[in-house]
Amino acid sequence: MADPARARQPLGIFGGTFDPVHFGHLRLAEEAADELALAGIRWIPAGQPALRAAPQTTARQRLAMVQLATAGNPCFAVDAAEVAAARPSYTVETLERLRSTDSCGAQRPLVLLLGADAFAGLPGWHRWQSLFDLAHLGIAHRPGHPLDLARLAPALAEQCRARRRDSRTALAESPAGCIVTFAMTQLAISASRIRALLTSGSSVRYLLPDEVIAYIRHHHLYPEC
Ligand code: ATP
Image 1: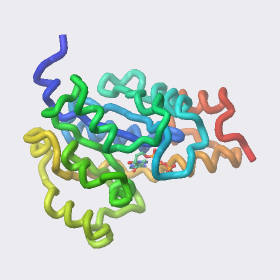
Image 2: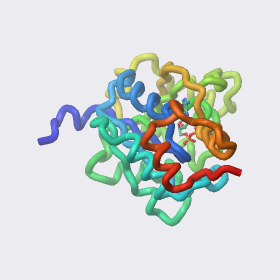
Image 3: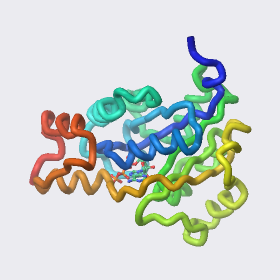
Image 4: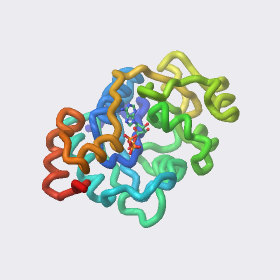
């Protein structure tokens, strides 16, 4: 039977294109669970990402890679709902969907996990200010993307000043609305670099799980130019 105390603990929500998923993503999720005392992490691969060029792989292939990468970690679950959707994925709508289901409901604290680069781009997101009504934000440091208020868009810097909390305990005290940062192990790994290595025929070993590399090879993803 599910532990009712655990079911009230904050839940991490980790969306991304994951084209492909790599150890930067996995360490972010693992360290967020520890640092922010999360009950678990729900990974949500985007179907059609709204704000970037079309991925080089299908949504189903990216979902399969995330499933392979996260299998075996009982704290991780994969949500395939966006992959099946025929329209662009907007995070605000994803969170509204989660809030309307029994698994999250209106009161459970949700923590949307973002790397510092994604956070800096937040003002370009659809209805971005509504995100704070739906979830807390957990921001991971990322090499090359310093979390510097002076470099953020003024409206985002203002939200940051108002909402930033130093302690993770704030996350458990309300369903949404706070911003916390955490200094995860710094890994200068990106999916775009992995794609570039694959298309040039270079090694990607130790940048992403072997199971994902095997899947990429089996399905001839990111072919060599
Ligand atoms: P790309 O290089 O194609 O832009 P990516 O490696 O940034 O991809 P995404 O799927 O776009 O991967 O990222 C999903 C989330 O993971 C984003 O919030 C991003 O900031 C974060 N992230 C990705 N890689 C890292 C990393 N090495 N360290 C910290 N955060 C990361």
